Amino acid sequence: MELYGYYRSSAAYRVRIALNLKRLTYEQVAINLLQNEQQSEVYRLINPQGLVPSLKTDDDNILTQSPAILEWLEESYPEPPLLPQNALDKAKVRSWCFQVACDIHPICNLRILNYVKDNLNAGEEGKTAWLHHWMSEGFRALELQLKTERGVYCFGDWVTLADVYLIPQVFNALRFGVDMEAYPRIMSIYQACNELAAFERAQPERNKPAS
Ligand SMILES: N[C@@H](CCC(=O)N[C@@H](CS)C(=O)NCC(=O)O)C(=O)O
Image (cartoon, rainbow, N blue to C red):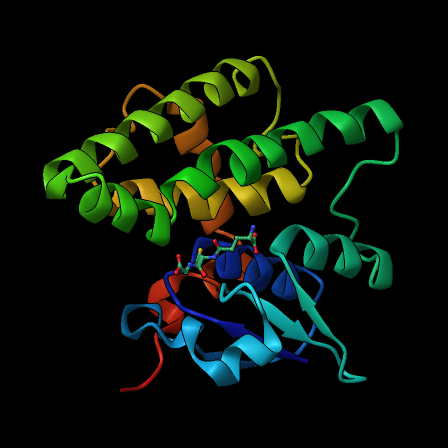
């Protein structure tokens, strides 16, 4: 498989974690977001949205959208399972995933931040305020839900897709200086996950392309 991504892209980071958890081998193709390579004609043939990640499967199918890629991986490579068996538990885990994927990540994405900064004239300060506000809103709600859960990870002692979504988002928040002190449960999950080889090997600094 080939993963088109960028080391700091949190959506690509999700997919790296899941590929590692499922013990799959993959090559990485670096699409440099800071050089706008995601907008290039060549890459748009792979992903017409001009976003990373994209995954080329072993039989040369191209998959886009990290939630679709993660669901495909789960169905195609069921071991270890990253969703609980029970329908209600599954819905609970997916709810945490989607809080990150639908309500935090898309409004704090590079193109949105650049639009807020440049087109809405918010400047660097306004951009940072936007990002801190929306990330904090999302983490506040997640912390309330996760702190009533038992176990090391989001869902008990089993790593699930909820952790796969959460950890890159926390990485991103720390990178942008969001104060995470108010979310001790989230931070303890972050630390526990990063002790696992699959998460550790997926970390951005471990996936920086050689320049
Ligand atoms: N919903 C998409 C979001 C993908 C996405 O926003 N990727 C970001 C990096 S995390 C990107 O390519 N940004 C490029 C840009 O904003 O121009 C997914 O989960 O795959």
